[in-house]
Image (cartoon, rainbow, N blue to C red; front, side, top):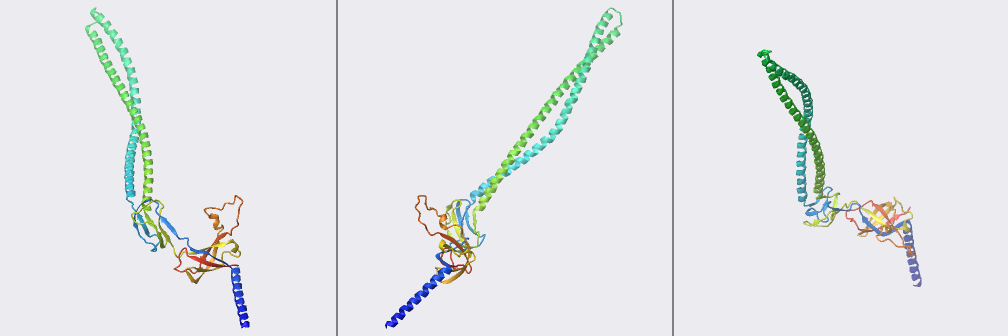
Length: 371
C-alpha cells in the first residue's frame, strides 16, 4: 500500500508538471488575454440635422434595415410654408426686375435719340436767332433813315416843293418797314421761346439720365436681394430634406431612442444601427505581452457566450497609444508621487470566420501566436 501511495503521488506530480509545462509553453508562445471584446466600425448613432416633431418611426429595435431605407420623419409643414413664402417673394422681385429693365432700356433708347435731336434743335435755333437779330438791326437802321426821309418829304410837301405822290410813297414805305420790323421782332420772340423749350428738353434728358442710373442701382439691389432669398430658399429646401432620416448602411436597429410625437432637437439620437457582419475583435493587451506580437500573427479567439467554439483571426494592427492616454481624468504625477502601472495597448484583430449570432460588445479571450 505504501508503494501504491508513493506511485500515485509521483503520478500526480508528473501530471501537474506536464500541465504546468504546457501552460508555461502556451503562454510563452502566445500572448493571452481575457480583456477582449467584439466590436464594429458600423455602429452608427443617427439623428436629424434639424429639430422638430417626430411624425413617423419605421423600425423597432432588432429589425433589419437596408441602406437608403427611410427610418423616421419629422413634421415638415413649417419648412414648406416658409419655402412657399420665400419663393413667392423671389418671383415678385424677379418680376419687378424684369419690369425695371424694360423701363431702363426704353429710357436709354429714347435718351440717345432725344439728346441728339434737342442738341441739334438748340444749335439751329440759336443760329436763326443770330441771323434774325442782324436782319432786325439792318431793318431798324433802314426804318430810321426812312423816318427821317418821311419828315423831310412832309416839310417839302407842305412847302409845295414836291408832289403829294412822292410824299405818299415815302409814307407807305415807312409803314411797310414798321410792320415788317414788328413781324421780325415777333418771330425773334418766338424763336427765343423755342430755344427755352429746347433747353428745357435737354434738361429733361439729363433727368432721364439720372433716372436710368437710379433704375440700374435699384435693379442691382433687387437682384442682390433675390440672390439672398434664393440662398435662403435652398437652405429651407435642405431643411425639408433633413426631415427624412435614412439608414446609411444595411444592417439592423441596435437601439431606438425616441417615439412618435416626441419633439427632438438638432443632432439628438433617434436610432442606432449596426452592420452585424462588419465585426472585429479588439483586445487590450498588456505592454509586457507585446513582445513578438505584430500585424499578420494568427489568433485563436473564444467568445464568452459560446465557449465551445473557437474562432480564427489575424492581427490587423496595434494602435499607437495606450488606453490610458485617452482617459478623461489623466494621472497627476506633478507631486512626484508615482506608482508604475502596467499599460494596455489596443490590438485590432480581424475575424476570419464570424458567425451570424455574434453580437457587438460580447466578451472574448484571445491567444495571439508570437513570432
